Length: 379
Image (cartoon, rainbow, N blue to C red; front, top):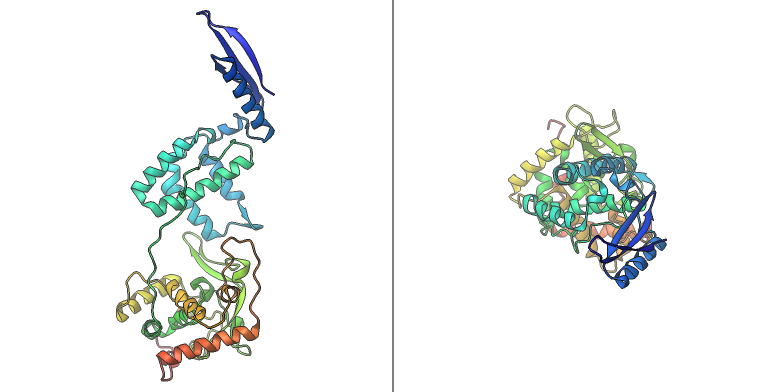
């Protein structure tokens, strides 16, 4: 608890010192008036009751060292950081945070320091980079509060972590079919599963032959493939529990899978999408093919394969009567607040969604889709 000590200065004035202990150190603050000292003493004692008085000694640890320990020990929903997430955090730290805050001890990172840093990063790297970096910094310092290394999180910028990403290009169904046809035959199935099935690129590149369920005309999402600099190809669990799912596909997509397997084999390695040498497809090869397909079709140069997934989700959302939970279950999204474990759509309802997609595709391409007319595996 705090106490007040009255003393006379060399000039003959009375001073009132509020003294209290923080950890193993004694601290004090001086006031000219007794009522100011009484108010501050009450504040210190109130902070002690709710645990806001931190030991200044443990706050001496440097931010850089603490951030590294945070990365090593970070656990989200019982899981350590995935290699791709960790790599992204390391890049944000190295690019936007450590050059400014690495020399500082945790206790020296004040709200003013954060505001100055945020403004500098916004000016040099842009608002979105600043927002991403701010969220990371705030998460690290939240843990420092939990570890009782600092009393409060100094990240207090309202809306500081909010990005203002521009609206993504949304391809039409005709553009999706044209892009599929423009892709090299070996990688055409990537766009089929993204644009007609709503799968993520990592989910598609992680598919194996055993994940194709011809009886249910579906694919099982059990893993995802990522490529991390210096680590290479990494196979890991899906992005979230919601991402581990079974997706019933429209007939055209299943026909494309069958034609792909017939043309390119895949039996030796068990991988569904392979490179010409027979191994798992590298994302860089798919990206090169995607760039060529975009140029050939003449779509927005900023379009990404992930935008085809949004196309599929948009078509699904147009189905009369489809519920939010059914849509989220199909495309593998968790609740925005991550507060509910949503129910998976029933197999029968999912079949209705796939049939609806079939009709949408037929309406755009009445003739038999050329996406399944794969030639010999020459390409």
